[in-house]
Length: 189
Ligand SMILES: [Fe+2]
Ligand SMILES: [Fe+2]
Picture 1 (cartoon, protein in one colour):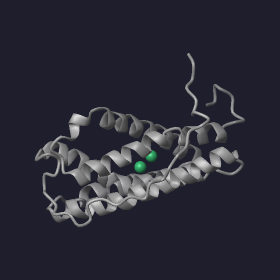
Picture 2 (cartoon, rainbow, N blue to C red):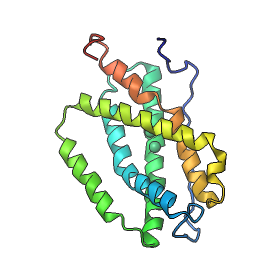
Picture 3 (cartoon, rainbow, N blue to C red):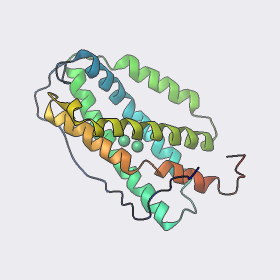
């Protein structure tokens, strides 16, 4: 089976955008649908801590990276930092409407504590896998424009912006893994 490689001419562009700061917040902001709203709210609550973890996991192995990979890691980091900034703002808005973030935040924190002494290479492998899922989810969000019908525009834009950048940088953790394990056998990998 052919293994898809990151395109040589891929350019990862961090887009410094801000969303919904001054908008009036509806509780069921996803087209009035409590289920989809809660699903995306829950996902968003995990992002700030999760993305910080992804950044740390990838950066731990940037030494000796090719100039191309180094550039990509830098762009990946900038993208994730801005995603977190926007999701922190989003999370504040949903908390204002009565959505209780605390239990989920505590669960994320607990998971982080559990993994903090794990070998860095394991964290990179986990990041690689989670970035794969994120890119899959982003693809679903991008391929079904009808999905966003009736959703408050600034929030639809936030999720689409995030999706675009997740697809763009989906190979970075994997390429970092290939770099980090370059001396390993195929079996070991
Ligand atoms: Fe992200
Ligand atoms: Fe990502």
